[in-house]
Image (cartoon, rainbow, N blue to C red; front, side, top):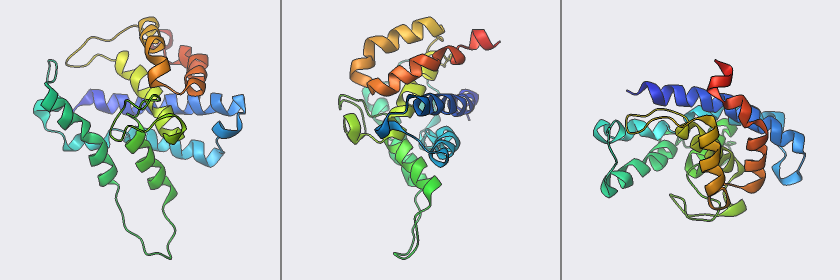
Length: 191
């Protein structure tokens, strides 16, 4: 339905790998990721917006600014994404790690570090690390990508915008790791 959403998903997978590896190098205990965790985060990153399949095209592909009611409907993509990966198990069965990672990432990638995000408004370390990682990646890619409703920002301008909102929006440790590898995401450098 939307080529840009597909491209966005592919780019976020690459960015998640780089960001996870950088965090691993920093060797901070509460941010340390095992190889299995990195693999699951990289593989589930493209699923973060899967709930958008449940958003009407009139909103998803609208060329102009969304009205408040349309924003509310667009925000439903988080719950719809979590719901899409719902499964049931018996008490004796183990949960499926990959799906649980995806559900956690989807549910928390629009939460803000200061608690002003959605859908729940959780803050700081209450936001799962997967969501804190995806938040930085998602914002960067959204800013640097052309959409039906906006032009793409340059890498430099996107970083400047993100720095202005960093205290409110992003986990400072994750954002620092992102800044250390952000040059690798600059599309004009890789073209």
